[in-house]
Length: 404
Image (tube, rainbow, N blue to C red; front, side):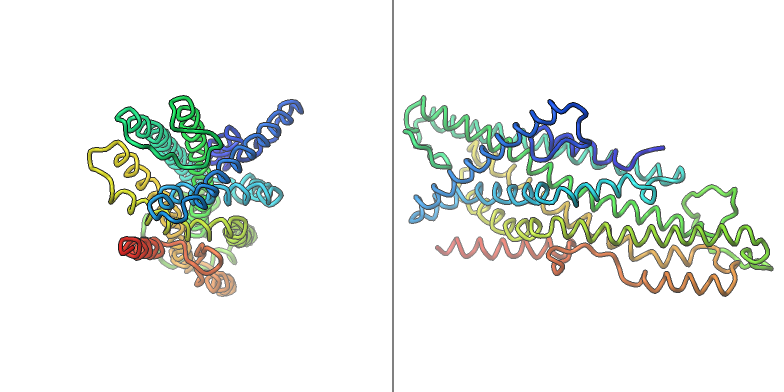
């Protein structure tokens, strides 16, 4: 049987490569486990050092708006990454529980339809991750190239971040540029992997809702019926009631409904748990993104269209816009699927069931009137409307900086 965790395997592998999270599952070799923990400690030191360098640089350049913007658009992104990194590692037990839920029996596929939607979701999540990794590699190369080009052309190139040595000479400049380029690419890789992992959790909630809807639509199907997507035809009443005429089928029907209810409850808990685990990181994400997008646009506005820096900044802006979009898009998808729970119940062959069983369906439908809508900080909806609102806020901040 296909494993639900397959959709997350590339994500957790990538997180372990950059030491942003532990190896999942834990390696059997204690030596490998210890070496990876040491590797994670080194990465934490490098990440914190990189952020401190930029904090010092912001303090040094506090009297220059342009230099502050040049540093902050990078610093805010890396601080955002650090927030998500802390969320993953400070709540390891809760992360383990989420992973155990994914691998549990209620989230496991039970039909060819379930397995099909899971495989398509796994491919989609894998391609999304690969796309972001490719974008990060391109951005990292361009971040390394454009300061070097400017230096070769004899321009005064100001590197972001504080360095305790002279960066005007070629040796100091080369060391600083290599350090900055490697660390920004490394953190960018970790950042987009963290984003894609969180998004994969919400995408799995959407898939589970699709599976639940399919099971509800075929709730009253005969025992030998294959659970496949409904053809859209509304069922017609039969002469008798299936659950009364066939007591054995009535017992099976109640077990099916009980499993659907337990599945629905677990999906609701799962979605809320994902919101809670990444709550603070998501708040930082949405508020920081408005500033990052604003400062990137402000920086682009002052660049030449033919410069290497313009192309790299444009690519960086595209990554930031897409990074926020995927959260809002999949949040909207989860809400959309949950709004059709009651429709799926209605599309089942409920007319062939007894009034007593119909009452139980009505109880389920009463809960289905409240959509499973992911939120940030329990207030801000993860929706496309929120995405538009963040872009508007970024434009407002941009006009404020332009007046300065």
